[in-house]
Image (cartoon, rainbow, N blue to C red; front, side, top):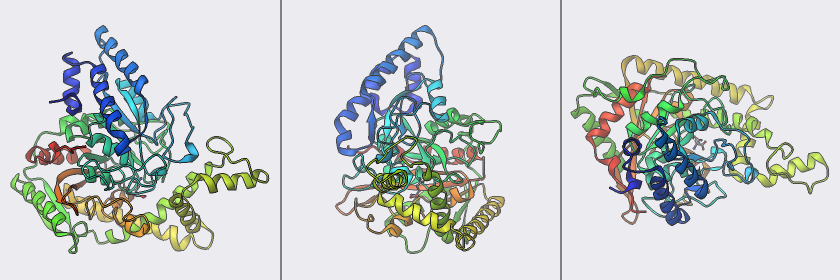
Length: 490
Ligand code: GLN
């Protein structure tokens, strides 16, 4: 096995046994990034020199006997996490030269655990998108199929993990941004429960939906990374003060007798037969392992989740993005006629079409006279969706569905039709709306137009703060299937 193929778990053991050094490991990734990032555009910023320096420091610390869980582990960070002294663009020209003064909580926790930061990964600007195409830093290609999208918005993180550019990466998920690209790139992507992980220092998209989670090569790595980033943080008022378990202890135990509900809204009748085939095979596998699968479950408000999300998310985005006025930091246009004109031109020139679409949608939905008809209505639908999840979780331990109705599509295919683009998240949005944890797992491949192998993921969802059951089910499934071991030929 080559160095870059190690999982997080394996790398921790090898570093601990001193059979490899962090410097070797870090260089192995940097070599791959140098060779292939030009083609895949997974990274926006690569820290060639700094990462090696950090790796050498980690090796020196290890020699001195320092014990840290991730000492010398090279990771990638989505470029909407603030990183002190490292450019943080959120993939928008507005923040092209923005260098944060402080670390986001998740980044500082990872640093305390000893990681080496390889660089910052590409995304749809501000997290708005499902294909990775809304970036000004080179459009990411799917590592399994050049010319196909990676999914979004954690496009670069998913592509980087799949291509062995790093051991693991962080992502943010507002409506599916960890799970959908994970599914398109054959990696594991988790959106924890709302409140589980602090968003302090994450570039805010929609604050009542945003959640941070790992993208990893397998489920055990996901649990390991989750262990490090969870926990209460007084700087994020929504982070919940509660005991955090050791998630790796939850992995074993199997799924005999686990009550699995398949919500029919997540597996509609008009699905592509090949995708359907992957899903059915996954269900059979779970049944074979002793899970009690019930096909007859309905969460009837699911079809309204898309409309609900595209009122709430743009409303919150329009408020969060109001801060980019060219006055305090970020891109600033000074050619205008006075302060107000400058602000207007700053936003006109700095924001792309998709961001503007969302700002307009959000400002409209929140405006006096329309607030009741749109925003308030969306909040009511949100309550219904949440309630249906609560009811379903009285009968089931986990809910199973697809991550996305299709595998990765071709670059450009959905760009002209935002509605089609939004539809690729129909199955991931409800978990954000309800705040429940959701996870994407590699489940198989279907053929692309020219015979490309396109990954397909299944989604598991669990009760709020029951990531343990989620991980246990996911791990059992993973152990019984070969999909997570597949690698693309980059
Ligand atoms: N694709 C969804 C959107 O465009 C979700 C994005 C996300 O989770 N950040 O809003």
